[in-house]
Image (cartoon, rainbow, N blue to C red; front, top):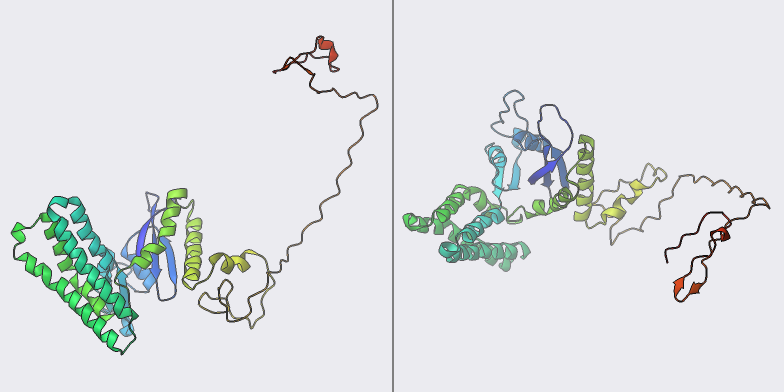
Length: 346
């Protein structure tokens, strides 16, 4: 999950600005967008179905009924607050912690270039081991070998900060700050070892927000609350269809063109089903063209134009012959049947 700012140019009671937030939630087969007026914990709990005290806003100590939530996100404080609830586990984004090392190296290239490069190689080894682990067949020798490589790469990243902390007084302050963040968020970063089938980062959610961000730079946002709700619904449908391997335009075509009501036994066209329109390799015959029920009115017959009277003598706008390469004006203005002098801008 992730969020980015979004402008809604509408007056809302209790809100003194037009800054709203576009949230995205990605699941195994769906991508859901919602545009909310705030970036607070209430938006997250409402979307995830976590009940909190309506008066104080306090979160429950644990999720009811043994329910468990696994949140893959960045280090934003809202996600950290929800992670304090028993039953909610945070999976912190390795791509974000990598950016901290990159930014420190870019800000201080003379002092931290080699240090940053060494850390990027350690994180790269972790990503390579994770890719091999995800590609290996369960129970095979390659998977066991990839799991050992992943554990080794994770252990190296775990022990290296403590080794460097011995000489922390000699380190650059920017490097000390990044290593402190790595140590503080280590539990959520190391928890990826328990879920090797999940990505090491939340780049899927960030890529899903790329479309709204490009739109924000072009048309600035939404003009009303209703248009913001419509935008979030359209993004949800098209993003989910795209994840299922569908063409979003073809998938939405039946709803954009009036068509006969389907039979009662016809299954709904969900993006993850094989029978929905827009799939490149359908298991059933592709649907035929939508039959439009719109009645096209017959245009009225054109009214014939009346013939001009015989006495009408329209003026002639024919150019006079050229003389010496230039247009020669008429010698006498009365040559014009309209009685007005001719002017030529040859």
